[in-house]
Length: 368
Image (cartoon, rainbow, N blue to C red; front, side):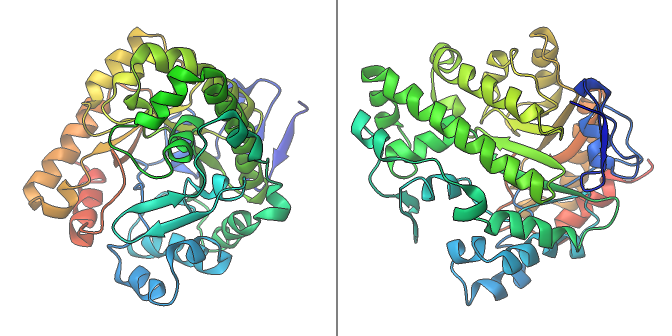
């Protein structure tokens, strides 16, 4: 790939990706490439959402999916938390199930039951019904929302695009909704492994094109969520899931933006990702940062940065002293990493206190 300067992403792009340098005025990008940022970078998963009254005001007239598909409104809610808090990144307001909604399945959100996908994929014939979307034509709203959001960011803030990893999205497509047992996922895996891996491969292709569209629209970093990866036995995860994820991540490297990867709840799958060429590993709050770092170093992961990992409920019910202590602990545990991006271990909840969120940021940036 020829050397070129991409003004949109503010990244120098070279033939060898290791030479890519983040703009020094974007702390998150510098940290994501293992460099020393100008200040401690911070953002929060689900930082736009139901804990903000201004978000609730917009939702009075729009349901969730309509909001995701309205580029102007999606950009507005993406920017809302950055107006309240001194954050280093915006993550586009969307949902990991947007891809299957454009692959031939109908997505709805039932009150109290979460997402529901029509006609679950449980056979070879179900798999054949699916199609690969043309993202520029079929669903341009996510890209348009990213472009619109960029207009409201400062020079130091990073625009993050995201998608669900193939296994996690496949889990919803197979189950038809969220699940506690993942019995249909395991039934398909154990009885028709070729259909299972075929679905993962199709999702990998779809996800790459979806994220490529987001980068073209202006995303400067990407995040890949594999939230449900821990539902499989480690050997099955390594055999059936990791090869597809590895191919997808290798293809995403061609986009020349840093990738943040979340390997699931609990941290057990950190042992299985040594073959993945990762920039940033996001750690769930269940796993202490120092333990995650020890595992990543032991397996020889080439990661450049670690992200996380405050318990989001601490920002709902914690005392000021408890929040400050947790921030100091996380900083201390992450100090052995090449770089650290402060975040919660999973998404902020509707009960999140804006006051406690501000206290966490104040403590993070405290000189003491």
